[in-house]
Image (tube, rainbow, N blue to C red; front, side, top):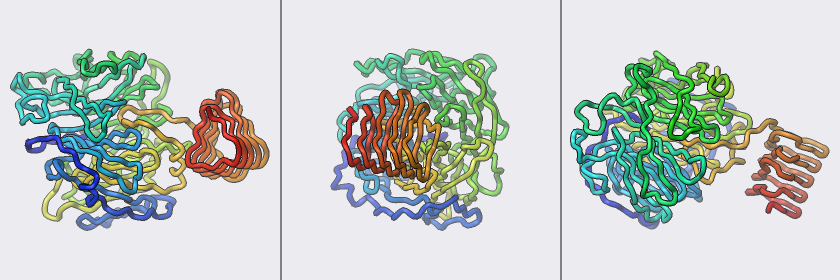
Length: 560
């Protein structure tokens, strides 16, 4: 998600790309390097044009260049969403669907050309929601550029049926005030519908549907039994009167954490923490401002919901902010602790983080979209920095964040600043996926002892701005352990363990095993979680509801 000008309007058409026709687009994978204790940052050496540099623990394994209706420089790649073995990659001209069942060799499934910046996608079941933040002559995929001053113009949210990934079907549009720069999904409490929080801004007295003041968001309710009846059901004003910063006229992005009934809003001049227990009526719990921040862009919770990272998109995404002309706390992340409880929760600033490498003045670079890596017992995220590349940050100590891996390309040109770089970079089920504005769809492999155990967690569906939770380790074990073990409470996580003895998991407790050898049986009754991944069990497993993945069990198995 970004604050950028719209691309030059182009004709649009729907385009299905066969797998055979796109085979030549795939770049061969690169072998993953051994893990490194820390990122080896080259703060003074700027890579050459298109040259790739990285820490040893983060390597590219695949790339699909832009193609078809998205091949032009003005067709910017944007956000990503995940479902099963598929990734949905947004573009200002529509979206691609890739099959990532083999991450080293992703395949094109389809391309839908449906012009309308900015093309951020989110998925929910058989539905895909696409943000449109440029006025169109109408809501169709054949529309032309429109004018905000015209009543007939349209911008907002497009809804597609993706039950057939090879042939997504456009089924509904919903107009929203000022369009949809970004959007965020929130399931309803009764699971009968999904809400779409629509973020937009830049009101104008000349605009028909986007007049000031605009300190609000639009909330669309989508009945799952009848998605074509989707409509705007609320437009809550987050900053009534003078509550908002003078530069705030809407929100750029909202990240929700439905399980905790929380949301974090990056609202241009304000960072806010919200209670969303009433889905149609978000309530601000805490509001912060920072004179070092120019444009509050996006937000990420840690898994426990006790920390928040806000990003500052100084320069609107097109500026060269990673040069010696800017301080380390400009165009950076700001990390906050969430302290207190209930309605008394508030945001308390702890630190800044910015990548330690300098870019040239010809590279747009600033903090952008990232996601958590579900590493055992740690708060770690991967993040896009446009042409600053990809950074992996450990913020377990929120006052002292540390970069542990990086990957970047050199400038796109030595004569002009071409808008490019990693727009969204997210971790999903063992790999890092990045949508580069110009260079296409990248797959990276992180090989690091601090993060490899994240492969024990897998999501069937992931929209990063609708943040899911994963089991939180209360105890992390490594090394050798002799004797039987009873897990009485909490979740015990094993990473590289040799366990000589049986394991019993009491009701409500949990066990997560990764890359371990268990010499003994596992017995669990009404456990909160039992997950065995990339491990060997020399004994039986009796655990209803357990997950066993990429593992060998030399004994009887009862999980259902």
